[in-house]
Image (cartoon, rainbow, N blue to C red; front, side, top):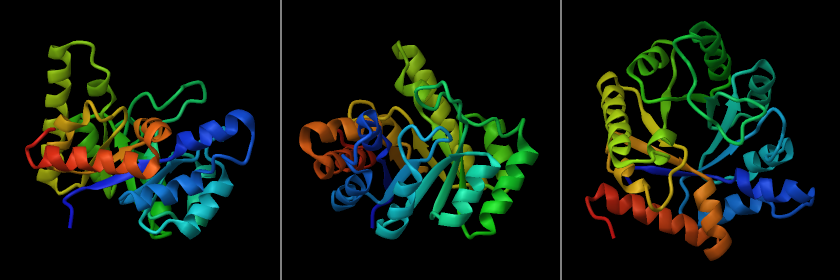
Length: 247
């Protein structure tokens, strides 16, 4: 059994579909192909503005995904009700602004502790495990643990987008320290945002991190080599890094 899970986010297959308002390409089909390639989880983000994933996609995937379904969602009452209805295996609460191209940072759990506690309680009533998408900061980790999160997903964007080697090393150190803090308090820790075949190795080598949610780069590679092969390539890159080997 692998010591990590790869969650494949198929949002951007839906982005391509929605750009022409067609029925294709279907993210449901992409999810099936991702699982055939070895995906351990399918991740989708049902945004409030429905810019890519639609409720139809969530409904069908809830019936067809064979591994685990992780629903990324804003921490709002409307989205919580949708999650309660469809019951994904995991709900990942993320910050969301309509004008952003993609998620720009982690939740401020420390600031919004009580509101997030209520969302977590509501979702757990439906037997949905809850992860919080946060920046790699100790105060955010401790706040997430105190309000009952089942896991946290560390935002890796600052590391992936670093413009210089000193900044990249600093951001990697933050991720290492955050992951070790999670391990010490018994909080499962995941990672995602901006990871691709060229930068995933150092993050994958942080053995405390047990799940990686990767979307854009896998979908982009799938355009060239196919979804199943793109997933296999990413899983192999992570596997090699965790074994201390990089091709």
